[in-house]
Image 1 (cartoon, rainbow, N blue to C red):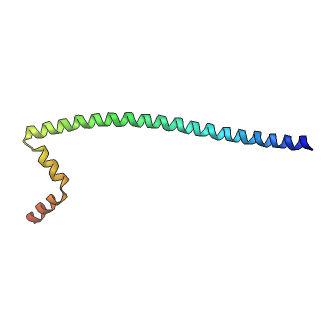
Image 2 (tube, rainbow, N blue to C red):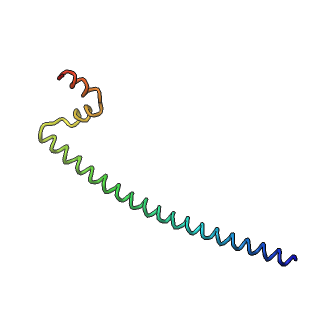
Image 3 (cartoon, rainbow, N blue to C red):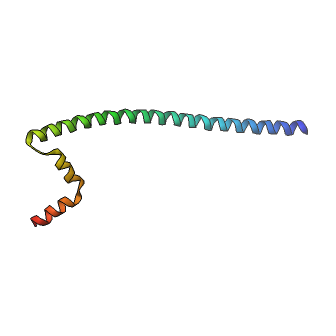
Length: 91
């Protein structure tokens, strides 16, 4: 009887180890996939930040060429109350 009990315990442990191994492998694959996604996202963000800086420089150059005060314009955008007063005065 002792050998049967031991064999059953070993069999259960073997099954459990196999299930755990499959779970660990699945998690490892998911982590690898997420790492790739994060890497791709970082590359895209860096590229977009570069493009945004270029576009900003172009817009500021065009604004300066047209005589638009970029700083004042940005301050107006940051102050939501500034537009309300202007709209009320016009109405």
